[in-house]
Length: 212
Ligand code: SAH
Image (cartoon, rainbow, N blue to C red; front, side):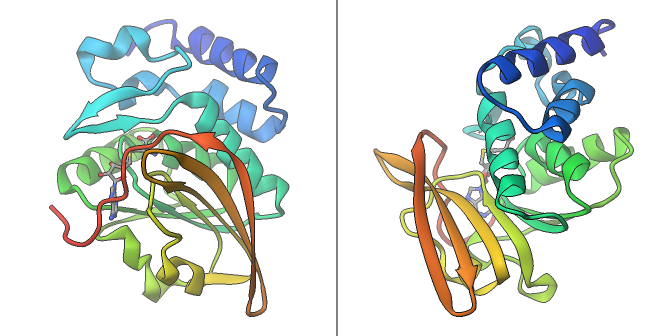
């Protein structure tokens, strides 16, 4: 553990606030979570910088600003309780969700990453998260419906299974596109789905099909 992480995490939270993140619960979560435990030893010195970093297996831990912003957008859209995350990766976004929503489900297709993330969340005493090794395109049918669905890898299209697993009034947030990706929000009202483009973003791809 970095001895002075509390100061570093607080400084990161302050930086995100200056960058425009307003939600107090999100800022508090960022200031409390030791991001360095989600990162390999050689890169730990960069843990509290506002940058994405490699986490192995060709994947990345997302930039803290985007983690905070996506969480804030879900909260602004009125999501409170049950959230599904697709692409657990390091587990950092999962930890932020665990601190800001009552119950979190998270799906990851690479088993090694899923195991590591699970250990990290237990280390932080975050027990309101249920994780699954599986293909995120399929969502998590047996736990549906979800009030919020957050996808942290870029899909070519909005995965239809995920839309089907949104609760009435629920919100999905996902990067959509290939070379050019757009963070897209979909709000469900009954059988109608309204799409809003939020901002250009850059995520690793949501891999179709099989799990590893
Ligand atoms: N929120 C994570 C982002 C990790 S990168 C973090 O900040 O650490 C995106 C993750 O999505 C990777 O771990 C990748 O393995 C996972 N992923 C890609 N395609 C997937 C799929 N079809 N189902 C589940 N997870 C997937």
